[in-house]
Length: 381
Image 1 (spheres, helix red, strand yellow):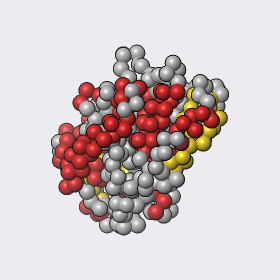
Image 2 (cartoon, helix red, strand yellow):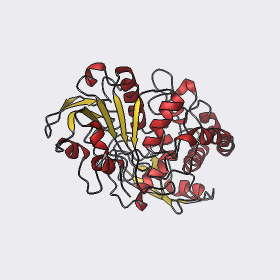
Image 3 (cartoon, one colour):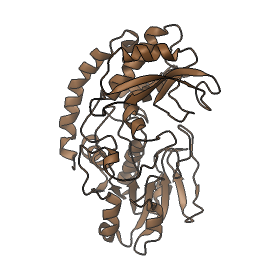
Image 4 (cartoon, helix red, strand yellow):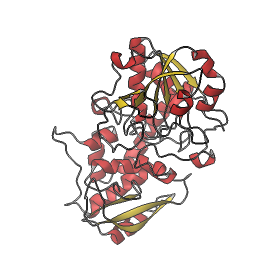
């Protein structure tokens, strides 16, 4: 299997010879030998790299979730690094003055909450407005390109964790999403997608033989990525999603939970592809920092039968039923719920509290079918 990066460096770079190139990337932008795209471009005699752009977590991947990143000068290349997760998420005219082309090389994790695909959208918008070319070096969807899960984001809860009407698990590569943005959302920039060679839709990341480079501090591996479609919703509650532990989005718990009882109740639901065990942990930051928590670790038994969103919703339902006086959805100062932004709807909170998650998932099927038809013209593999 060969990445879009490999094929760009082999032949496609010649189409951009003499043009000033900006690179939107981070530590995941590497080739199969883990050499960074930044270095490959900077040291290439026929590639004129003039600026770098960093998404959430920064180009070195060390920023925490939601943490504003400052622009700076890269000490390794001497190039300006413009943050797209600080004062602005969309590059300004001044940020694009020194480039003719923006090249995107970031590893997505296959769910709509993950912000890299929205950084891509905003850069595409800026390129359309400023007459710049936009190039995507395609990479695998780590949780494969066939299964989809969830609902389409409703207009009144769109945000940087759900900017467009796409499902929780979208089953697309970043190159395919870029084409979807251009033709379905109307972001009409001059777009080129450099496809991969040898990636097939049913492949998971461990079948690509590529090294896993964590796109952010909490994206610890493939199990986390497969569970994330469901367990990311925990972020909108007063439960710990395991941040500040070694197993974020695999651990879920709180100081008020009995881990043994929760594991038993969850396993009694008989969900396919997953099993829980009780865990005891103390987060070193984020929710319940330095407090003893109990909860469960989710273990994937069969990834092909796992439905991550159902897993997350049934888990939240179970906690809400067992701890009705303790479990809460976190409300922000402006009266909005972050959970609604993740859920893509304001209805899901009540659905969980009333034990109707399975009904909700059945109703999602019509939306998924709509999206399946909508995305079909833009699938490359």
